[in-house]
Image (cartoon, rainbow, N blue to C red):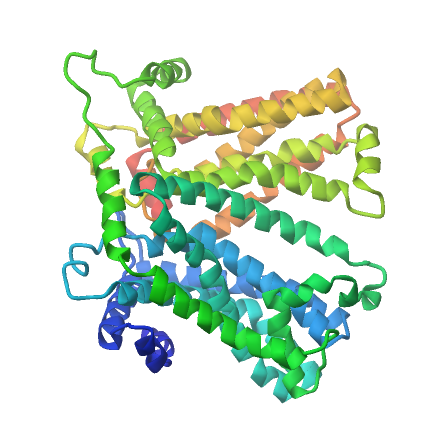
Length: 564
């Protein structure tokens, strides 16, 4: 597969050469990067069958994206106007691709770990930038193929071989558009911002953009009339003609499908010319001095960690707060250490903040989306909000924040620093893990749940207090069970690829049924106070048992959990 993707990336070699890149160096860099991708790194004390794990992970990811592709192809089957249906289809693909770039792949562009190998060599900035962009392009191509396969097959089934053959070209241009939209902004900020501020600016942009894209996915479909999708017309939205999805859909005017607006053939040409022109501008004008600025950022980050001066009580400013919290919520020294490590590292890690912070916005956005389902307006839905028990949905959805935080609290780019866990007489690693769990719970989940609880009390009144307490215990129980089943790792001790074991993913999927069972049980007893009291007692007992089991995880149990 590596040779196939390498050949695909180097297919337009004359184009890369015209942009100022050295194609021989470009091929060599890509070859090394793809080779390293195939070598799944291992952690200290880890024993697992990497090839088997990688095979299952790839299969599960492919099935997941294929399943998503069946939903995205619905406009192609419901809407008869081919240009309109393809405009919606490409808008969905462009949204999800851009979102993945923002959340998962942008760090590849600014990875400075190879600066000691490549930067001192006579390799131009344009070659380096293009190599990194093509590396991300290959990642996205692996995702976009299963994601677009159902739509591709459907077009061939409905429209014939011409439509299916043409589909490949706009799909490739879509990937180039996504690359330019995200990385073009990043490189522009890199040229304008100071090195010490650059990654902070990018982090805030990533969080903001992730929330915007997530919101758009849920609320843009409300532009359509669900009962009469055939009556929808782009003439009511003239601005659509200036968007890339419409340009991509206009390519079908070349084979006889005419768009709503005049000049469809020209818009189709824009779909090809614009991405390539943008890529040329990005590499030709934004790439110069890329290596120098990346090195500057890396230097600033290395200098930002200053040792504590002697004679100042051995503490940094503000350390008393989290240290006191560690003393309050933990009894053993090992748990206190885990608490403080997780607290400090989640504050320092931009990658952690960028991946977790959007989940705070996703919960209210999705709740508002659920409220506005149907024909009622938002104002009408909010006025009658207190008539039902929808607050249970909001309370249990708060688990998304804790799930997101727990997924990434075990990951780190500096995972090799986890050797320190094995260099000390740590008898029960579960103590450190439960301390990290408490830090995430106190720092992120508890304040967020309190804010949601205040909203619930404002709308539904004091009668919802018992429901709030029961939901609070149930969500904590659910997260504890997930941590016990599939997250038996020390904080910041593994790399992301190691979290993709097939059995572990399967366990996580099974674990998602737990909040459904707890939520439905709570909903069934929402009007029976004594039954809620019984549920509260049972959940509290079960939480204590799971919590104690997780805290007493031994080294043998951790190894077994990693092999599964």
